[in-house]
Length: 147
Image 1: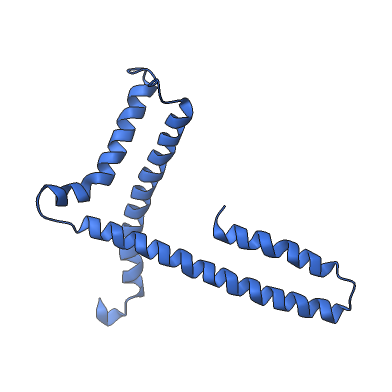
Image 2: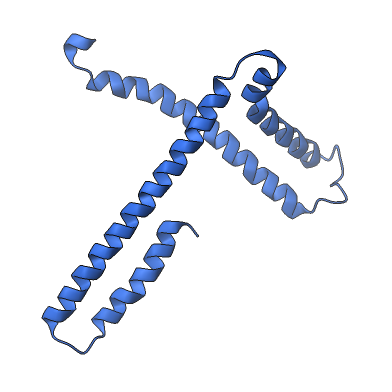
């Protein structure tokens, strides 16, 4: 469960509780307005937190991509693709029956590895797509004299 679902899970029952209060409609509306403001404030803080996390992750990836120098610089750039290729090799070998399921790995483990592979490939394809589209979108928003 992510933080936004948790916040909604807290405030939804509270809003239903306000509906069931035995008080005037004006007081109900006032309580709902205060609850909605509080909900919006918490959602805003949660989104700020999520944004900060995404920015931190992107800075790590950028630092890895810009790493240079020697063996470790190359390894820093290549560890994600190497990991994805390793997972892919493991799954292909298992899928075609070239290797038996390892004794210490259940099918659940292989399913999790497949999930990681889907995320890795999806992230790569998604980032490449955004990279290609963003150039065209940015060009569309430029002023004619800037082009």
